[in-house]
Image (cartoon, rainbow, N blue to C red; front, side, top):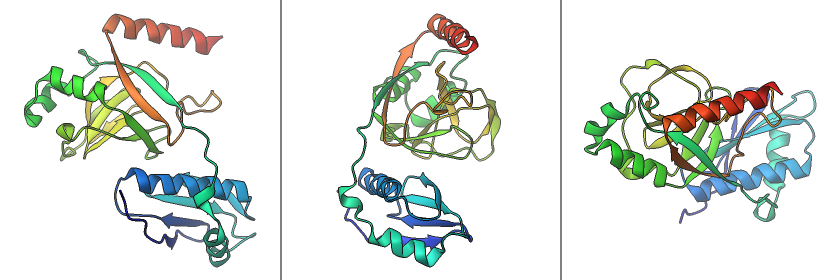
Length: 235
């Protein structure tokens, strides 16, 4: 259980405020972030444009022509987020293929962790993950709940781009990549699910605070799901 500490109010330029609740990845800290997010939304504070929840803080973007950093700090500090009504989180079961060529780095990760590839797959697919935040790139889902046995440091140098839907691990965290780009993380699987689609409303699949479990599929199922997703997108 995390001891609740007073939030820190950190100006981020002239049009954003960060409200920080802690210094580590922790469910209780994240619950406070989401509670404040709901309270800010319900209060309709003057000048607030949008909010961005992260692992341990809430960034509040505002229009500096309508409010100021001191005024916003005062307004946020007066909010009672302890009783903020949160919508129930949803639970997602996301299909993942851990077979070659969908798990390009699995053979590299196994000896570094002292585990077999099957042990890594069993641990990764058997865990319950929490969606903590979106960030770094559009639709990138940062997850908490990675088993300690899968904690591996980030690469010293980035590897070539991974494809969209890649399941990545590094630094004790798990991630679903939404677009292709180089990374310092390790790819151990891939999902055919479109976790981010700018043509869809909402564009992201899961909300912050939702939970995710990965369900193992084979290469044939992966290929069919990609066909089905493409057909749906073209309708």
